[in-house]
Amino acid sequence: MTTSKDILCYAIRHNGDWTAIARAIHSQEPAVPVFCQYPCVTFLDPEYPACFRKLRYPPWILFYQGDLQLLNGPAAAVVGSRDASRKALDNTARIVRCLKDRYVIVSGLARGVDARAHTEALDKSTIGILGCGIDRIYPRDNSLLFSRMREDHLILSEYPPGTPPLPRHFPWRNRLIAAAADLLVVTEAREKAARCIRWTKRSHSRFPYGVSRRNSEMRAIWDAIG
Image (cartoon, rainbow, N blue to C red; front, side):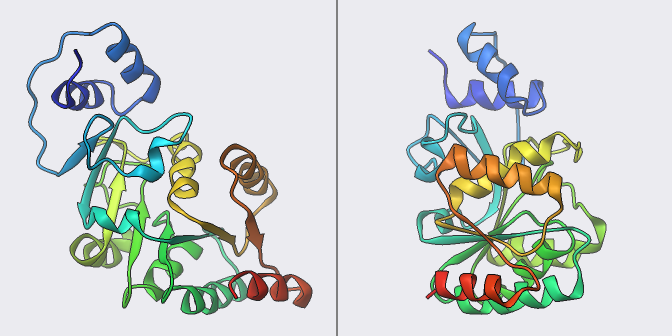
């Protein structure tokens, strides 16, 4: 029978690859004891966050720093472009100020909209979900933000420590951002990202609100957040 220690071994051995870990579990691949300096929780553990269990592909393991209990309350994901316009950054700040008293703010700890969303929520609660190991500060210019969130909020990843931020990790990571949130707000995104957001909506039954420079769309988000 597979144990939590086996899943930790598989995750490290296979660099967090979901399919490879699934195969290892199915075939009962031999496992050896491994050490991880960071807290982690597996799908087999009772403290595993309920919001991820309903996913079609729930993460087998989560490595984290901070307060895992933040995943148990109402949450709003605020995401958008890394190369955000000034207007998008200003809108992000305004939206987070409206939401943060009622929701934990979830984002991806990237530069641009993500960093602004987390920063505006530091006086309340915020969660950063990564596409690399939690020991990898990416991008480097978010190092102070990482430090604050590790100590007072929550950062987590399904990838083991040392895993680099490979491009394919980020679209896969986005399913966790959607699953963790009751509300998804996209303040600015390019067409390729928009297609990914529509896929997230279909696959996870979340409704994404888009905010642009047009006043009618701005009113939609204000109505949505009450």
